[in-house]
Image (cartoon, rainbow over all chains, first blue to last red):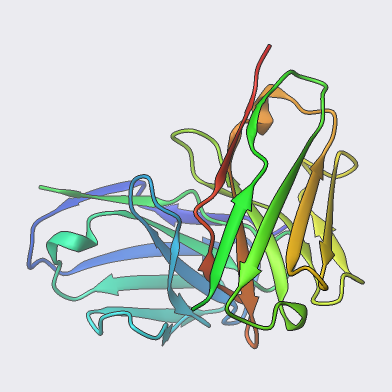
Amino acid sequence: DIQMTQSPSSLSASVGDRVTFTCRASQTITNYLNWYQQKPGKAPELLIYAASTLQSGVPSRFSGSGSGTDFTLTISSLQPEDFATYYCQQSYSTPRTFGQGTKLEIK
Amino acid sequence: QVQLVESGGGVVQPGRSLRLSCTASGFTFSTYAIHWVRQAPGKGLEWVSLISYDGSDKHYADSVKGRFTISRDNSRNMLFLQMNSLRAEDTAMYYCARDRIPPSRLDYWGRGTLVTVSS
C-alpha cells in the first residue's frame, strides 16, 4: 500500500500570509494526487486534482505542484475562510490512501 | 444539482451488522464509480471502499476486507455498504463520494451518516 505523509501536522498563520503544505508518497504516484479541504462538521471538498489542476470554483489563491513522490499545496494569501484541515490523497492505486491531514489555525 | 445523501447510520453493538445507503441525484449515477470514506471522531479521513460504475469491480481497505461489502443498484441510483462483524474501531462518520475521471478525484461528497459501535 502507498503511504501518504503530510507535514506539518498543524500550522498557525495569519490572514494575508502565504502558506505551504507538503505531502509525500511512499512510492511514485506520478501526478495522481488530490487535495481536499475540510471544515469542522462538514464533508471534505475537492480543491486540486492531478497535483496542480484547480477544481472549478476554487479561488486562484490555491495552487498545487509536484510529481513523483513530493507534492505541495500553497495558499498565496490566507483568507478567514481558509482556516480548515487539508488532506492529500493518492489516486494512483487502491487502497486510495489519504494523508493524516494538516490543520491550519489562526495565529 | 449533484447530491449524495447517506442514511442508515446509528448505534449498534459490537459484532452486529448495519447497512448504509447512499442515494444519488442530479447526475447519471450509472456512469460513475463511487467511494466510501470514513472519519473516526476527531481523526483524519480513511478510505474504505470503491465500486466501479457497473458494479463489476470492487476494492476495500484492509481494515474492512472480509467484513464490509459494497454494492450498487443503478436502477434506483443507490449505493450500499453492508457492514458485518462491527468493531468499536468502525465508529465513524461514513461519507459516500463520486469519483470523477479522468483522472480520478472525489468531486462531490455527501454529508455523511454516523455509525457508533458500542455495547
